[in-house]
Image (cartoon, rainbow, N blue to C red; front, side, top):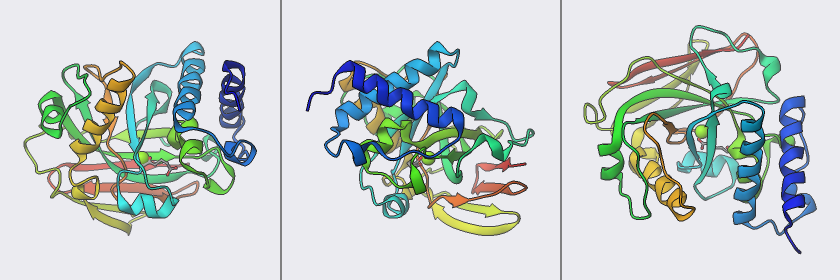
Length: 262
Ligand code: OOG
Ligand code: MG
């Protein structure tokens, strides 16, 4: 079949309206089983372009499915990337209303604040660490627009990798102050431990995930920019939460970050 610009735009608009109207939709591959991954990234780009036209600003990137825990949970075994916009940035001190979401889940992540532009197709984790100004604990809230939070690889890519919201902790740590593969991670809900892991769950070292993204973007002539925030991917499986819940992520040597849903 032919993937015309019109069809890609129609699918991007359809996902965007699901997000705005807070409702689940059938996954794209139910209708178009042969959605190529490159076309899925084109749809994602169009979705982000619509958000930008509506006044949102891209402030960074997120990696997805970078840990075994997440790959097994979702049944999708490849690393993916999507975009973060300023509308998605939540703060620790302002509770987020549950009505903002469809069926959200929280994930513990390590955020990178990029200190220097980085572009190329052969970048390594060391290059990423050199270009990083700070790292910090983060919580990503994901909220797939698809029914029952189920999808295939191209579906989730088109849906901007389930992105909806994220909080970055206020303890910014110099990248070489901790060993990001050895840090221990504990995610709790309402004071009870839910999941545990270590930084190495993310491709051996979270900077590997960021390097992968740089190289992927490089293939499209794009790169990371100074000041961008990069979420390197969930270290453990994601957990569901409801109105009234609070989620806490603690990372050894890096402090903590909380998210409150009202
Ligand atoms: C896709 C997004 C996964 C992560 O950190 O692994 C993700 C999903 O599971 O809905 O953000
Ligand atoms: Mg994530």
